[in-house]
Image 1: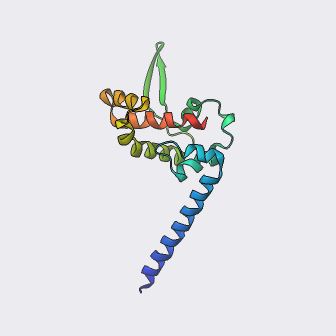
Image 2: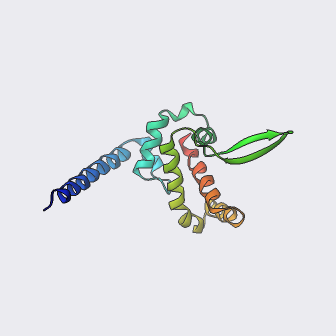
Image 3: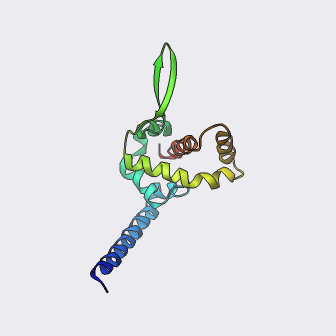
Length: 146
């Protein structure tokens, strides 16, 4: 075999080993096990908030965590009238990105489900852009973290 092919094989084996370690860690911690029950949250997305946030009791509410992560719209008030703009990119960029990608992957299935969340998502999709709904879902997913 070529040396480059052997390097790829070794790299694939290392990635598989690290993936197994993260999955094992996610299954052994009570906090991450609860997070794994949320659609769109896998082993990486379950271990990341525990590593970034640490003690979720210090955050207060899920909305506070969503704001800290930059998953809520930026507000500007002029003349006493609040105006909402795009989301910020505060907090952990890694966690921010992973929660949005997890919500993006879970949205099609969740929006078709016959649950309260599915109905809420269908209602949002009927009058909002899909990316806006993805961010709203990822902000809602941060609720159990806080």
